[in-house]
Length: 221
Ligand code: CA
Image (cartoon, rainbow, N blue to C red; front, side):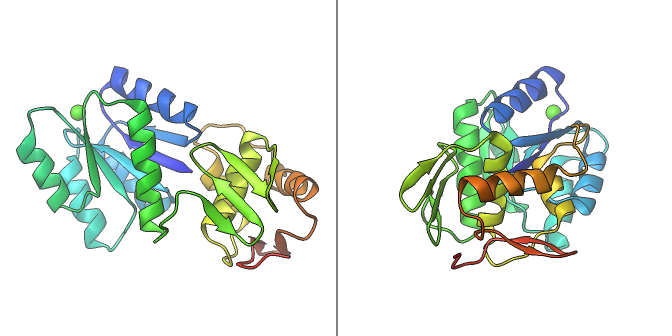
């Protein structure tokens, strides 16, 4: 899952990015509100971690604009311990959750998983699509009740397809969700991951729509 981190403090931002990456998230980190606004208009993220005190455009203004244009991306705000008024303003402006800085990285990751789950209208933390069970927290997959070992990107790709079963995702959309800016990506990377997933799970589990993209059917074969 790709997360946009917006934090102008270098040290804190670096720690948050490292911790989230370790938790299996793809992370893009921006340090001002205006750049974050642009990124959110053009790219798709599973969730946003947003500091409120930011240069060029405040976190609150960014949030207000985001919700004004009906963007429903889950947002978790980071606030100072004593900044209760800012926390209330953030939640009222459309934030979904908050954490007080400095926050525990395990808790941040768990809250992000919960936010993404809730935004998808999903009750259980384990995703079930036909014979597949996907546990985002443990990064584990079972196929017909048997655990299957997947590489990190293979897991991420399967998870993206399983988050929206029945929906066709293009190669570009998938690449955008799996790779942060500046990360090396081979032109055939997505095809290669799909190939491995089919070999490890089942050949006809993921459907290819030629020239369009890939889909995990709601009731896969
Ligand atoms: Ca700040």
